[in-house]
Length: 258
Image 1 (cartoon, rainbow, N blue to C red):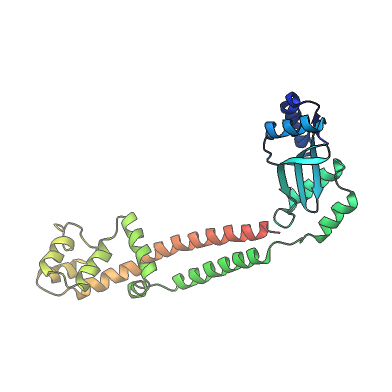
Image 2 (cartoon, rainbow, N blue to C red):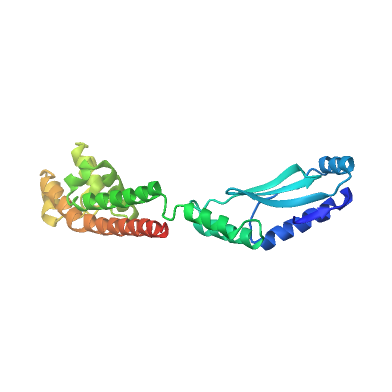
């Protein structure tokens, strides 16, 4: 028994004492206030005090209020789930033994019967997550050319966003305009020469050739080479760091499972 009330007007004080006594056991349980009208009626009819009782049944700890040997209301319940949270479960068992609500033998039996390792399904999920990340990192690492990137929609979308963030998207936009066979004059106005809105980085020879009426072939090759040697390399380096960070976090979570 944690506390008792001899008369109905002492229920609030007894409830406060019960909560304090419960906290001293080290058991962290959410409890609700009893229905005073219901408990008072029982006390008056039985002519007996109300008792706040902490009990243990199997793997469940319960706080109840009793009168004349009968449970009037259950105020709280806590499961000793060692499998879910071993540290917390063991702490509850130790608190119950200290409070003499459970024998050492009962506590040891529960400890022995509890699974000591992490949940196999959780472990499998973490291992799968790590494997998927490593597989994706390896696959993305093999993408080295503009053509490779275009074949992988997710990768290309990420590359495009990266270029936008770096204010260097003009190369991709130039290639897209040429591939779509956009009006020649519009392409020149947008990308070719110092007067262009977003000048693309090509050689003077390629620029002169285009302005003189030549095709875009040489310029396209130059832009693709630049994307491969510079933009793609920087994007790949950033991706690798992101993958390594995610893998490290997943491995830390797996290690924390025990």
